[in-house]
Amino acid sequence: MACIRNDRHRALITEGLVTIYDELRKPPFNLDDAAIAWVRDVYASLDLDDKVGQLFTLIMIGTDEEEFKRIGALRPGGVTRFFTPDLDFERRVISDLVARSKVPPVISADLEGSRHSFAFGTPVLGQLGLAAVDDVEATEKSSEILAREGRAMGVRWSFTPVTDINAAFRSPIVGTRSYGSDVDRIERHAVAHVRGLQQNGIAATAKHWPGEGYDDRDQHLVTTVNPLSMEQWEETFGRLYRRLIGEGVLAVMSAHISLPAYVRSKMPDAGLEAFRPASVSRLLNIDLLRDQLGFNGIIVSDATPMGGLSAWGHHTKTMPDIIANGCDMILFSDAPQEDMAAVKSAVEDGRITPERLEDAVLRVLALKAHLKLFQPSDVLPDAAEAQNLLAHPDSVAASKEYIARSTTLVKDVHSIFPLDPAKTKRVLLVDGGIIHPLMQLPLKFMLPELLVKEGFEVTIDRPDIVPSPDDFDLVIYALGDESLLVRGRIFIDWHRMGGGGLFKAMYRPWTNIPSVMISFGHPYHLYDAPRMPAYINAYSTMDTVQEAVVECMLGRKPFLGTNPVDPFCGLEDARY
Image: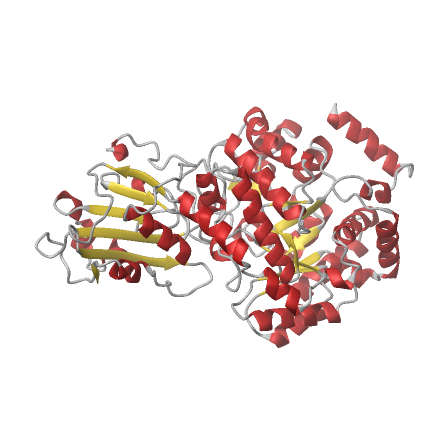
């Protein structure tokens, strides 16, 4: 029935009885007369180059201010900023960008928490950590904190929540970014996430359409496949997206993920076409998302430099295809001038129709109008207000409480905990380092310093050390890889961690020395170490999380986290 209603509605638009402006008055934009007038006036003032520019959200990373000026000169509709720890620099960069813009750009970021938390703000748990707390009030409050601190920096659009399902446990990209593997838990936390953002002036984005997590590969490297039947899809991702659309989520990110079952339901002999990425699929963006699910907000592509798109076609072809096939905005570009020219050319030769261009640009402007970016005071708060919002004591205290409740004791078969320096004073720390996709070298854990302060003697593992009970009372493995970009699979790199070559990589000390593994990232490392006698999932590498883990290991705080996934990876022997 919904599909029939939408087909009729589309016919009314075609006949001119319903306009796109009528659509913008409806959820999720809900524009009033003043906002509609602003959208009309701005659209009328744009030439073709301006309109094409509005279709792009470009990336600003690093500290090259000349590069930032070049980006601003392209007049993009939005900019995504990866923030440095320098607050004054960041505010100046955003202020300069806004001042140079003909139409206010919408500033976006991945407000995912954990290592995406602002360095000068409140450390906030990531999604999987919040799923372990499993308190929707904690999730909504955490999203509120991210929203308030984001607004202090001019951010008005977050590419969250991640609504993927952690089904294929070896997936390196879903991992810590999702709310776990249980659809009920994902739904209630994703709803709380959207409310926490949008009630505080940040547009939320459900991603990654049409649903990631059943393919253990990474769409940064390859076009991934959602292998579900449409009945299975409706029970999982269909349910999640329908719920968030009903909640008024403003945006959906169309990813480089295929959904063969839906394409084949329309084209039984689709062949390769069944595996077309959603980002360039009219069937998935228009027929399924817009018409069947009734989504009326803005559709943004996932990042276009990703291998999941570049493996499908050359960027001068795929960029126009993104807009022509239903996305309203293109996320990132390695060659923005060339890509903008390609989109403009596609408009001029009809590959992108005038109606599709108008619809996309007006939805971009509608997002800005909804966010009231036409009011200068709503673009970037003054410095004093921003300073008051960032790392507010109430926010820090609330987030610290949630972090304390997230640490999850998966197993302790030999009753190692609570630790006592009088019993296990000599600790060998096998430190895998904190792996971050934007850092060339691993970051260091503060865990050794925390343990030393508690009276332990800590030795960092070296290639020449062969663990022996004559030298050590306890071995701790610390793993720090959260969801990573451009890694094929999750696995424990025993060779790199041990640093002692082939034979040390094969040695397991826990048969004669008490041992514990702490994952400050992916929750699935028991797959590679099923006989590890004690295992903790902490979900984040932040310093505050490391502090919370130590508190729990010493028995000063209880382990309160619940498993949002199966940390045993389906292996019975991993439970023992």
